[in-house]
Structure formats: structure tokens, C-alpha cells
Image 1 (tube, rainbow, N blue to C red):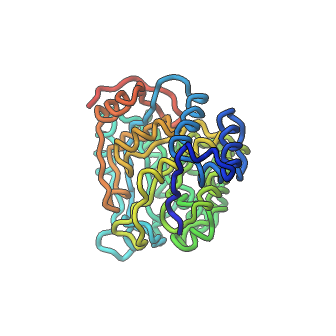
Image 2 (image 1 turned 60 degrees about the vertical axis):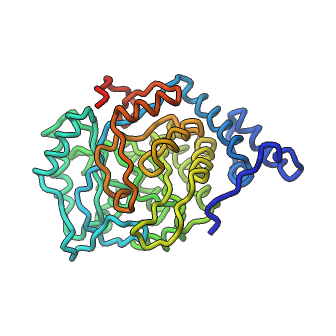
Image 3 (image 1 turned 135 degrees about the vertical axis):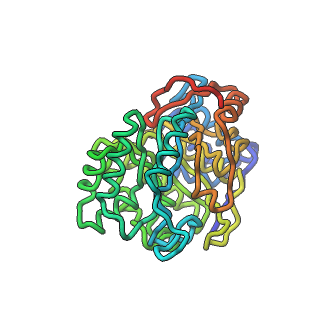
Length: 376
């Protein structure tokens, strides 16, 4: 696997071997839509300074105001029991494990109440593919959350979970989505995308839905009026070209539905997993982030990932196309299980954003600003 692409000096980009790069860079600078060959030239050949300049220009065309947004939320993993056994996951436990759990209402109450006290506006609910919980369990959980905290935004589940329930309970994907929405689901996270290439997924997550099925769930969610995010976890067993496949698959779906609010790429964290690779360095992350901003001309927001990359690289990402700092992330367990444990308070997030020359603005999932909160 070629996991990291060498950057060239901007001075080298004037040679005859870089004619395709110069053409692609000219299109990107003019705000024109990039085709596959343009994306390949930029991703494989452009220097990091060139990519930063082009991506930041694209970001400023979409968001000219000197603002960087973030959401106040908490990741709550309602269960760690999963039958998928994905090779990249250090968080799950098989059904027979004594370390498996399903969250209690009492613990959920404590987590939600703390989130609201800290100025959060939403929770992100995700779990494994639990073999024994009926769909009614999820519906009852959503109805209880909605009734108990009516202002709380419930950003929950993922395409693989939705597809799993569809297969398990003999229901169509739209039916599952309609039932969950009626029970209180507000929006769907883009989890479980990894790299949207079915051959890659067959190696790293063979018991999870295919790339095509992930996209089908998202398309159905958009048709049901659910806004969603799109993600990419890269740097495991994919080739660089397959990362571009992922970007163009997201762009093609967004052309049809306009349902994605943001794209969120991050690098695979291999500790305690069953995939033995070295973590990608920061330049590889920034390169992909910049290209994603240039390719995804129809996705309004690109998030940086301080959770996996740390605050300094996430700050630098604000000049590689990102306009959003992700989440306050009051709680996060899945990445932490892979040995990465960055933590940032609201005060820390504001400090990093301001140091980059931007104004921090807390937002909701659909990017509506919310009242400023104390920098606790």
C-alpha cells in the first residue's frame, strides 16, 4: 500500500511533467469543478503549499467570514457489543464477552445532563451491531430522550447500523429510517464509512455493509428528510486512488440529494487493532483534507479532526480547507480505545481558533449558530 505521497517543491511544478498539475490547479483556483484526472494530478503531484493555497481559497469562497464553527456534543456509545469484528476496531466486544455492556437509563441521564450543563446541544449515539436488541429498544430510547430533553438534538446511529437492522428485522431501509425518525431521530452521522470501496471493506470490515449499501442508506436518509454527515477513515489497507473513489462517491450522491452537511476525514489509529500499519503522518492528513475541499465543491463544510490529529494539526487544517473544528467531544471512546486521547475544553477550542485568526462560533448540526457559552 502506498500510504503517503511525497510533496514536491512549488518550484518543481513548472516542469513539463507537471502540465496536468498546472491545468488542474488553474481549474481549482478559478473555482471550476474538478474531474477525476484533475484530482489525481493535485493529490499525487502538488506540493503541500500549493494544496494549502488552493484549498484555503476554496474555503474562503464558500465561507468568506473569519469564523470557525464547532458543535457542543458528546459521543455516547450505547453498547460495545458487536458481531461485526472489524479488524480496525479496538472498542467492540463480542456478545459473550464479560466486558460487554448496554447503557442504562440512569447512566444515560447522567451523561445527557452533564452535556447540557457544559453548554452542549446534541448527543451522538452509536453502538455495535448488537445481535439481541430489537428495533423497539432503539425506538423506545429515542422516544424517552425526546420526551425528557425536548431541546436536545439526537444525532444517532450510522448507515451500517441501519442496514444491519434492515436485514435483521426484514424491513426496508426507508422503513427503518421512518420508524426511527418518528421516534425522535433528528440526523444521521456518517460513521462506518471507512473507505467507500467494497474490496477494501471486504478486507477490513467483512461483516459490515458494502460501500454501495452505505451510500444507499444515506440516499434513503436524505429522501426521508434526515440531514447527515459523511466521513472517511483512511490510512489502513486502501490505496490512495481508492480514497479518491470515496470522495467522488460522496460528491455524486450529494449532487442528487444535497443532504450532507459536512465531510469529516481522519486517519486510522492502529494501536490495539488487528491491522499492523504505521499511523499516517500529519502531511498525509493535510494533503487528503485539502483535496477533499477541492473535490467536494457541493459539500458546504469540511471538519478538521483534533480528536485524532491533536490541536496543533487541527489548527493547521484551518488553512488546508477546513472551516469547522468538529466537536467539543465531551466524551469519546472509540478512538481512545485505539490509544489516542486528546482532550480539549471549550476554552481550549476557542484559544486555538482565535490563535489562527478566526472567531469561534458554536453551532448546531445544521450549522445554525447558537448562543455563546461560557468558556468552561
